[in-house]
Image (cartoon, rainbow, N blue to C red; front, side, top):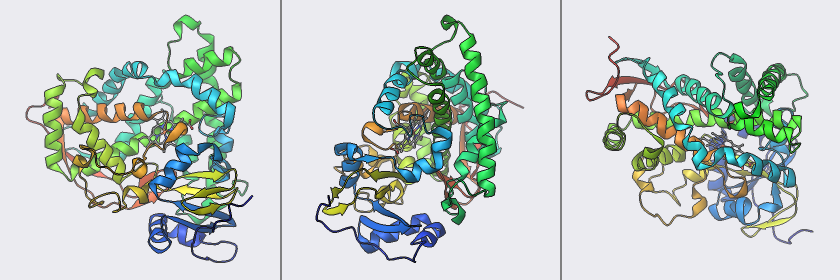
Amino acid sequence: MSTGLSYPPGPNGLPVVGNTLDLSRDVFEFYEQLRDEYGRIASYRVFGTDACMVAHPDAIQKILLDDHDAFEKGEVITRNLDDAMGEGLFLTEGDQWKSQRTHVQPAFYRQRLNTYVPEMRATATEMVEQWRDGTVLEVNDAMTETTMDVLGRTLFGVDVTDEPVVAEASDAILARFDTNRFWSFLPETIPTPTNRRYKRELERLRTFVDTLTAERRDQPPENRGDDLLSILVEFLEASDLTREELRDNMVTFLFAGHETTSLGLTYALLCLAQHPEEQERLCTEIDAVCDGRVTADDLAELEHTERVIDEALRLYPPVYMFFREATEDVELAGYDIPEGTTLVLPQWVVHRDSAWWDDPKAFRPDRFAADSGRPEYAYFPFGGGPRHCIGMRFARMEMKTVLATILSDYTFELVSDPNPDLIASSNLKPGDPIEIRLRERESSGAVNHD
Ligand code: HEM
């Protein structure tokens, strides 16, 4: 039953394709213009789908937290990901989701995460030990490799660096989201090159994941450890999880936990490279807190490092927007949202909105130092409500550990474009390489490589 209110305003667009062309030209500009012309709740159409952008913190809070039962992930997201991870935590709904979330949660308890820190530090140290004074580093590549390595070692207890299948499959899954390519809006049944590659890589990834699982099942329980894979295997054996759910969850965690964190670090380094004074503050903090190498206990004391991460995730949110679908007619900010409407929640727009942020384009970590009085959902890099990112603490710990390890030994300056092109893919990706030149710190504990 309709709420009797009016539908949010928006542009008319072309018949059939609606606003698809504008959207595929520049997603960021499209949503910002939509807000400027029609307001923070505004409608548009993509290939016959009725969609609304929701860029007001109060309405976002209502969707994610207060009335979360009236929304689900929806067709736009399941259409692209169902094949790969339809039975995993990211996409399931209702009791199935609840049961999985409860079962998987122990892998992300603080105590458990603390035990991952030495592995995170060791991985970062191996990376830093390859560097020299004056090295020009392609940041995104380096962070991709490191975060994949960390994920493999900590959550799955395996070295994935020798397994290109993981990186390639994750790339192929993520490539299907390139909203700057018109064909990404076509269904996956149409054999575009992206779709063919996706199917091939997904099959290879599944074989890899099945082998890993079989190997773990062959081990006696007392030798298995208590990483995520072992936890999943235990629930499979207790019949709390099907084989398909286990496999889809492995793919889910590889997909959700890898590129996001790598991009978070890449953008933090991009911002820091343009702010030597912030690097200096971090060096002072890290030298004062960490005794040569960062430990789990140190992390809570790295307060300014935390603020730098917060600010980088504000300016460059790796998840720059995500979707919900209304499962019933709902009222949102005085508008009628009919059942079936696709809702887009764009971090990119809200995190850079001058209504909530002073001088929004400036990199100013100190804005997170004091209580600002801004609405809670003016900042939501990890989503919110019951379906907030389960890996948030893991990602923050990893980012802090990697930054502290780098800045213990090196400072750096930006070599590449300070305003790189950004690609609205599955995540917010740099279109060009981000490059920094490393300078060994005089007081560094770095190994002398000469
Ligand atoms: C900077 C890094 C990360 C960012 C920005 C990020 C962002 C997000 C966001 C926005 C959501 C909510 C999506 C929605 O509500 O539709 C989410 C969910 C999720 N994230 Fe993350 N994430 C990050 C790292 C990680 C890591 C490291 C893992 C795992 C190791 C992970 C696993 C997941 C999973 C499984 C979900 C679905 C949770 C559920 O529905 O119950 N993420 N993430």
